[in-house]
Amino acid sequence: MSSTPDTAATKPSHFLRQIIENDLAQKTHANRHWAGTPGDAAHQATGPLDPQPVRLRFPPEPNGYLHVGHAKSICLNFGLARDYGGVCHLRFDDTNPEKEDQEYVDAIKDTVQWLGFDWGPNLYQASNYFDFMHRAAVYLIEAGHAYVDEQSADQMRANRGDFNTPGTDSPFRARSVADNLARFAAMRQGELPDGAAVLRAKIDMASPNINLRDPAIYRIKHAEHHNTGNTWCIYPMYTFAHPIEDALENITHSICTLEFEDQRPFYDWLLARLTEGGLLASPPPRQYEFARLNLTYVVTSKRKLAQLVTEGHVQGWDDPRMPTLVGLRRRGYTPESLQLFCERIGVTKDYSWIDYSTLEGALRDDLDTKAARGMAVLDPIKLRITNWDETLGVTLGAGTLDPCSAPIHPHHAELGRREFLFGPELWIERGDYEEVPPKGYHRLYPGNNVRLKYGHVVTCTGAVKNEAGEVVEVLATLVPDTKSGTPGADAIKVKGVITWVSVADGVAAEVRLYDRLFSDAQPDASGKDFLSCLNPNSLKVIQAVVEPSLAKAPAGQSFQFERHGYFVADRLDHQAGRPTFNRAVGLKDSWAK
Image (tube, rainbow, N blue to C red):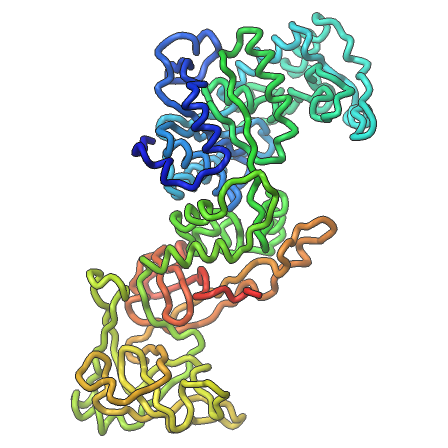
């Protein structure tokens, strides 16, 4: 993960960059040893000095799919490591076997790579350190810093106190070291059922920080782990495991979100005790907090996202309406757009909301420069050119259609052109015809001239209606010598230009018009039922017609449907003979106030 010397200097500064730059200048972490794999203090004290100036980590729990909030953490940690010539570890904090699965491990690895980041050889799992963590827990007992508590969960909760009331010591707090070691051994050997006992750190039950009131550090769980199988029936708590993992991996800056700020004193307390006991080397890592991503019209609670899936409100974790990264990918978001979004929102300690339009804007800005163009008719009605035989029909010959072309991208001529046919019957948007036009309407209405983009100018002559008075076909005459790109094509000035697809070579396609999943800007705000905020119009499936180049596209390719927005060929369902497109984002923010 090397970087050019001026990479960091070209990035917007924030408080975490300032901390890292100060530590580099002061050589705060210059004397760390690294033997290639995490180990205990004796292991770390041997071998060469760590060649990496900074070591960061992205430490997801493999209990679900990553969401857009994780993108901010991924881009931040891997980005800082890149900019300062260091490395970023991918580490799975897999300490809760009941909720974790290999499926999530694989999905997380795939997503991080898709976002454009590489952990190299630095792939780790908390479960690989369970032996060390158990040894650390035994040391804390031996040093008088931990005890086995056999109160019920309700008793511990009641005795913990609250912000106004100090906690009450457990009746088991005064146990001897020998008794605690024996009871912890009984926990380890599977002699006690789930919930019968926990190992607690012995700190201060009167602390104003409730997290220091003898927090639990080990609990009993007779559950099979996806990595260690049935080796263990006791598992470390996340808050105990996390700082140990950071220390074993030589992490220099442990970056997390603000909800862990109150846990930092325990983080420091634990590392200080284990360093004093010789189990970990100095200097220990330090924890720094930043504001998590709060994005309007989105929920990022894993519990609520799982509820959306299990109750059938969406079609799975990769539903393009979901804020999961697999969902955003299927929606048409690109790695570059998400990196751009994360760069734009910045890194602060301030709790604030980011408007969803910022995310959409980043995607527009990315796709505008690289998405191929194409014409699609989303609400098709037929346009029939009534003088075809007397005009182009004579020029081209009976039964011959007029070949037209357009650039694949208006600003990249080197990409070439796309080809399609112009004929006597075309598909146009139903909204492009009005019998009685409103003020400022420049499209098709009786007597008006309109250019069919990349094709010819036509004059609208009226429409055919069914018995119910509904328009079923629009009629027009072709104006000779007005084909785009030919001499004299602009002799007739027109105000209206519309897109179209020929009946002759247009291809039927399923188009999924996705919108925001929630209609409330803060659907999971306190007191709200987030399900009541679901947007009933978040998905509309239509049958459209697209030009041939779109139908031939590979799955996952992005396009701008001219006039309509940015779409992507669905990663799973798009195939030859059955083109399927998802709307990623409109050409402008339709939710703007």
